[in-house]
Image 1 (cartoon, helix red, strand yellow):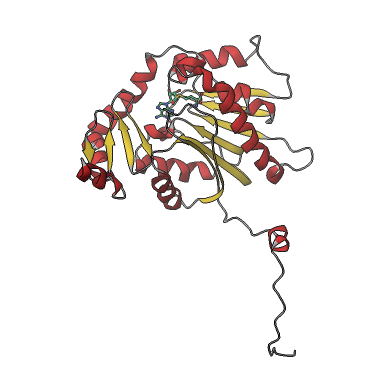
Image 2: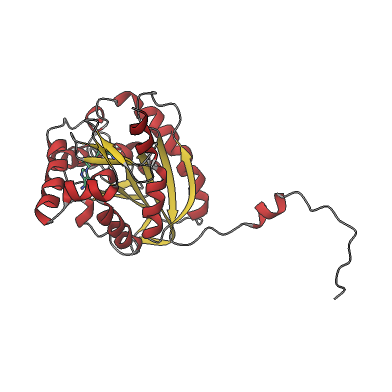
Length: 286
Ligand code: SAH
């Protein structure tokens, strides 16, 4: 027992939903996705899982439909802290919703702030349901804020249109991508951001290493694991916040705002620092 606990504290080690332990991420990825055939199989099983799930908010939230409100509140507050950094007066704002499911995040969050939103989602009955709702359906928003493009494709095969997006929102889907595909996706998607744009990643976070889910074929990564991948993708962490108010039995959820440029130390921050006490010591007269 003690030795298992010790093992799990080792950086990079992990376990699966049946309780099996892996000594490294490499061991797990090799076993699950080593070789092209296995990798194809991994992605097929991931999408296959969602193909058998009802196209509803409760469905995409794995039966936790009741966390939807809290999730939206947390996301709204996080996005509100980013918008002033990107909003020029009268700017036409565009967002991309990745692994969009039934369009929950687009409908309840992104369309409140962005003039255009595109959705990318590999499961066709989810995307069709989003399309029904958001295009001309009874929930459709005003013309000033509309869902425009609906791409039915997995993220590992998708390349966003160059320079189109202020925000690329990625929520509860990146665990389906292998490390290499995650890094490559971010690298391709960088060109899809406008200057000063953000990636927002909202994800379950494992306390240590990773947890492989054998049912939906996804991996929950730790904060340290994510940060390593962000740096491999050449991204900078601009802001991070933990989601509050979710049921105890769920993984902690974190929101990461990532940028292409390193965050600038703003003057305000410097000014807010307590002034240094003047000390009597010799200094150079210029
Ligand atoms: N982001 C949505 C849906 C979350 S459910 C929301 O928060 O409401 C997880 C979603 O990830 C499902 O819609 C599933 O089809 C999608 N998904 C599974 N594999 C994916 C892949 N390889 N690329 C992109 N999305 C994927």
